View 1 (cartoon, rainbow, N blue to C red):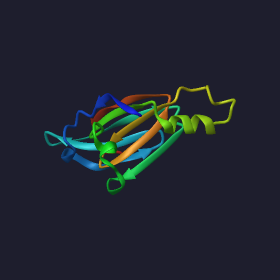
View 2 (cartoon, rainbow, N blue to C red; view 1 turned 90 degrees about the horizontal axis):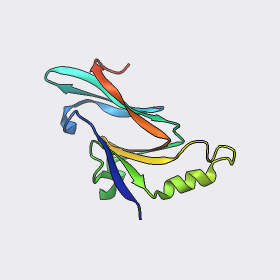
View 3 (spheres, rainbow, N blue to C red; view 1 turned 120 degrees about the vertical axis):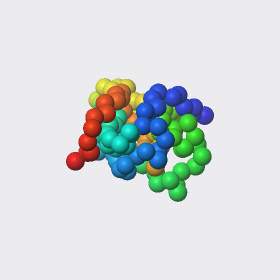
View 4 (cartoon, rainbow, N blue to C red; view 1 turned 30 degrees about the vertical axis):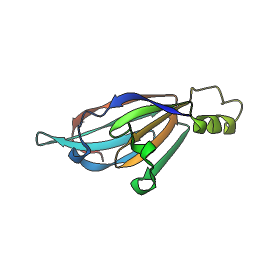
Length: 127
C-alpha cells in the first residue's frame, strides 16, 4: 500500500487566503494569495514531468486530501509510477527518476516528475 511523505507546506497558510485558483501550467503549479494586504504569486515547479492528473474536489476520496491540504507530499510505492514507467519507451524509461507528487489546492493535483522546487513568492499576479 502507498504511503505519503510530507515534503513542503505552502507558507500562505490556510486556503482561504488564496486569491486565485491554483492551476497547472506545465511544468508548474501556480497560485496566488493575499497576506497583510499584498497579493503574491508563487508556485511549485516540477522537473522532468512525465504525467499529470487533476481531480475536482467532488471526485476526491479522503485519501486524496488527507495530509495533502496545502502540502506537497510524495506518494511512496506508487502504482501510478509503475504504470507510467512500464508505458515509457525503453530508451527513456530510466533517463529520469519518477516520483509521484500530490498536493490539494481546491482540487487534487498529481504529478510524476524527477524533482521539484519552490517558485519563490513575489508581489503580483500570474499573467
